[in-house]
Length: 117
Image (cartoon, rainbow, N blue to C red; front, side, top):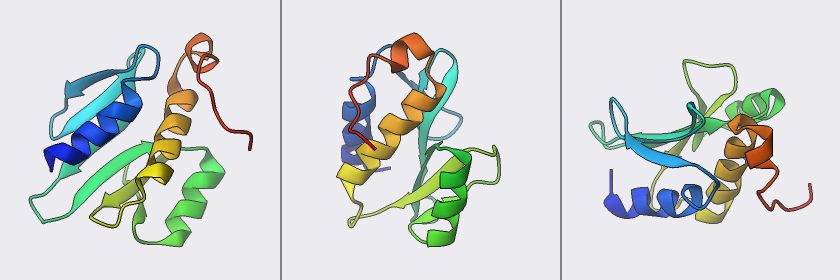
């Protein structure tokens, strides 16, 4: 995984209340209150991936959009995204913030400034 990409993701997530970074079984993950917000991994097949949480209707919508999105083989609310040189980092930051707000305890999520829907 390109270190620059991990740092870009960390810049977004570590700014969120009590969100921590740790090594995962592969790659790196970010958690809050024991729940995984995002997990970045890959490279052995020259593809880099990130998974994060979404509302159930969003999971289905992203799955139907196709690449760079995919549905992970685990968890009903998990969205996957392939990362590459064309990744829209602004969009990814918004998706990661949404993921955090879905899994964080309500008192922490309420402290996060989010754009109006």
